[in-house]
Every structure is written in C-alpha cells, then in structure tokens.
Length: 525
Image 1 (cartoon, rainbow, N blue to C red):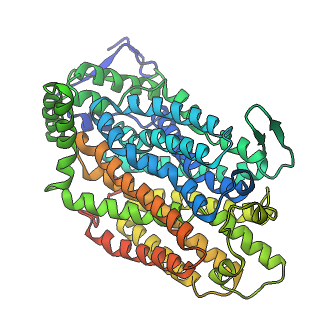
Image 2: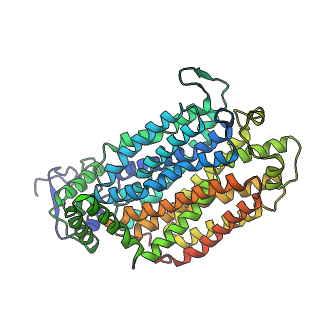
Image 3: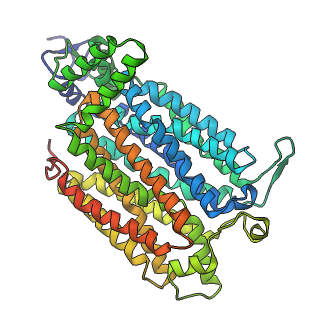
C-alpha cells in the first residue's frame, strides 16, 4: 500500500464482493459506455420494428397501380405484418424465456431484413402480402424480447430510465419514417425487370431500405453478451459474473479498480426461475414440451398475475389500434386532404371529404388511371412533424417520469388522444382536423411507459412471455385498426374515429387499476 500510487491504480487489483444479489451487483456497476451502446442498439431495434410494420403505409399510398389494390386490400397489406407478429409472439416469448434473449433477437432480425429485401421484388399483391406476413413473423422475436434483454442488464433503480432511453433513441429513429420516403419515393425514375415481370420503382427501393435498421442492429448485437440475469437464472453463476465483469471493464475503460464478485446469492425471483429451468430439463417429447409452454403461459392468467396481464394487454390493444392501425391510411388520407385544400375546399370534415371523393374502393384499371406514384410534399412535412413530436415526447417523458410518476403521463396521453379522435368527426377546418388526427395517433407516447411497467410487474422467468403476450394484443389492435379503416372508411368513417377516440378514453380509466401505479421513484435512488 505504501508504494501504490493513488492516481495510477493497479488494473489487476480486484474488490471482492460477497453475499450480494444480482440486482445489487448490477447497482454497483458504473453506468457507462456499455449501457449507452446497448440502449442505442435497443432503440435501433425498435426503429427496425417501426420501419418493417409502419413503413408499408407510404407504400400503400403510392403502389395502388402496380399492385392493383382496393381499400380492403390496402387494409390487409397494412395489417398482415401484425398478423405474423401475433402468430409468432407466443413462440418467441417461450424461446426467449427458455433459450435466451440474444439467441432470439439476432437471428430473427437477420431473417426479417432478408425477407423485406425479397418482398421489394414481388410482382403481385398476394406475393408481397405473404412476404410481409413472414417479415412480421420474424421481427416479432426482436420486438418482444429487446425490452427484457435491455432491462436485465440494469438494476431496479436504473431499469426504467434505460428502457425510456431506448425509447428516446427510437423517437429519433421515427424521423426516418417520413425522411426516407421523401428522399426515395418522390423520384421520377423506374427500372424495368422483365425477368420478374415488374418495374422497379422508388417505392420498392424504399421497402428494401426498411430492412436496413434490423440488419445493422443484428450485426451490432453480435458483440454483446447474453443477459446476465438470464444466464444466472439458468444456474451458470460464473458466466453471469464474467458478463458483469465485462460490463465493468467497458464502462471503466480498464483504468479503474474493477469490483470482482466472488459469488451471487439467489433472490426469490431467481429461485423461481431455477425451479422453472429444472422442470424444462425434465421435459422430453413434443407433449412434454407443449405442457411446458402451457406452464410458462398459464401463470400469467392466474393469481397474482392475471389482473395485471389483462390490464397491460388491454392498454397495448388500445394504443396500437390508434397509434399504428390508424396510421396505415394516414399518408393517403393526409395527401387527399391537402389536395382538396389546393383545389379550394376550405370547409369540410375529414369524413365528408373521404366519403365524397372515395379513398379508393376499387382495384380496377379505370380507377388506377388517376392514381399517383408520388405524394404531396406537405404530407411528408406534416408526418415529419408528427414523428418529431414523438421524439421530443420520449425525451420529456424520460426526464420527468420519476418526478411526476407513470400514471400522470399515461392519463395526459390517453385523454388528449381520446378527445382529439372524437373531435376529428366534427371539425370542418381541414388543417385543424389534420392536427387532431395526428394527436390521436400520439398514443404511442405512452407505449414506452407501458412496456416499462410490464417489465417491472413480472419476474424474470415470466417477463419475456408477459411482454410478448401484451405486445401480441397490441399487434391485434393494429390489425383491428387497419382493417376497421379498410372496411368502414368509405361508408362509416365517423364510426372509425369514434371507436378509436373512445378506446383511448377507456384506456385512461383502466390505467388507474395498474398495481403500484401511484408509486414514484425518487430521483436519488
């Protein structure tokens, strides 16, 4: 000690910690480079999910001629990726809880981006629909698993902020949604490919680009380890300690004393996970595997978890129906309203305009003679503003959530969105109606809070499955919203906005019943 230099600590020196739980061990780690990089990747993964599911909205608005789509078919194409997500959510949740978070995220991202590239070369509506279904099937693995994966690298006191940080990155990623189609789709070029029987237009290139964020995220995640909490719950204590040490080394840049754990003690959550692992290892054959899947799922619909599962699923359903389902037709409706304004129509409700002009109820050649391969520039500008508001909103929520609490944030979002959705029916000033429509779709601002709550409400051995099932109901809301507009937009337009707005208000009431929702986290914790 006498010969040591305080300003040059020995890198080999270790601080030995005994008798700590995994959460306590994670709380000892300095928040640094590893955490920020992982947060950025998690945000990019959710950007990939957004591009793969919502990016098709811009394609639908301009690909009507090439794919010969009716309004109902547009609803199907806009929703089919969510169908793939719904079908596979249970599978990926089970595999993530039993095989590993990272082992699900990486391959599913690679597969989804590959299929997206292939779909850009499809020549018919049904062919591209099948590809979009498969894209949704695989992107679901990353969508449902990334929150548990990110959260399990953080202690209880930093987990919410990490997830909200990823949502903030996702908010910046949202800006790609209007920016990329503006840069790509409004170009005049086309490239005939006789071998495939298609003309490769800008909307096809944009569709292919939608797969890039997922591919980049998968490559980046190859350098990151499995979740330490998952590894420890599998009984591999030494590997979990190695992962924690790896985080410490990256965060300290090997310049400081690095605490080295001698061991980790089990808490109640980890003990339950190890019991579940023992049951899994004793399962042989298909019947036993299905029984295990059931045992993995059934606790979510039994006490003490049933109430919270139902609440979170309902909230996800309502948010996705408005934020994603209503978005599928947004670029096309917005473009139609802007064209009407340019034609001198200054006083009309959104629904009167849609029903008088017809959003596009036929896929026949006569109708397609008037369809366009480009969108009004203001359509991109207003969509960009919408996504910019999401970005700022995620940042503000991340800063104030521990101060004001999750409930107040959710109530403000739900009530504002609900009232705006209902007002769209009656407002006869097109520009104001456009803004109200945009506010209706901002229900997604509460999604980051809802996912944070879901991660906190369930133990490790049920967490990924809980997120998967709640998101499955969210995607069901997206399918319902997109097809609701496809079926009713031309004939019962007022009803569609009334349902969406009312559902947001109901979500505001349901949020009061979330367990421990009134509890705030002290910033000093």
